[in-house]
Length: 122
Image 1 (cartoon, rainbow, N blue to C red):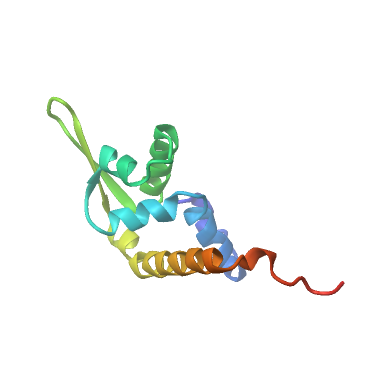
Image 2 (cartoon, rainbow, N blue to C red; image 1 turned 120 degrees about the vertical axis):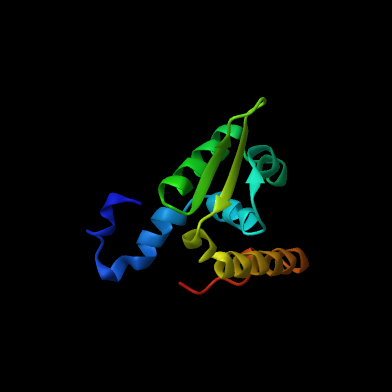
């Protein structure tokens, strides 16, 4: 858990949440893990555009923040599995809603470019 949690003022809860969940990949990783335990390679295949280095970094940060656990099995070849903690599972509804919204928005953009719509008068 981040050490600044005790020092974070109440008015910036969203800022604090974004400190923990921000970045391009963390919510996508959490969404994948909400489906069940995954090995590193399975996560990499599920998100083919993430680099190995970035996946490792994001997994370490999520583990440090208590959202997932990393289990290493002492066998040859070594096996590592990632599983959401109870705190990580508390985000299941949020990641599902963001996934649904992202799909809706992608389709809306495909139908008409929402980003280049009418601009407000200055």
